[in-house]
Image (cartoon, rainbow, N blue to C red; front, side):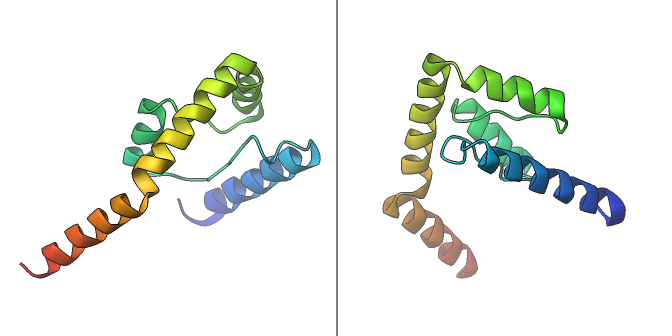
Length: 105
């Protein structure tokens, strides 16, 4: 994204984050902004999050879905498992080792 469109998206993200904070829901929602296709695929495949089309209606629908305790618990559990798998010390070291091995070739 370039120029005015990127600024508009960043402004919308700031407004959504501000509203989440104002509602006291910061501990339940993360709004990361733009993600790569691979990141979205990994997160949604793990059941650890939802890809939401920008816009108030889509965000509201996703929030209402996650307010269901069973759905929220399942998504939270999947997110914790994904984080443990992707960001554990072993996972980070494996990634770094792969990078260093690639440099040496």
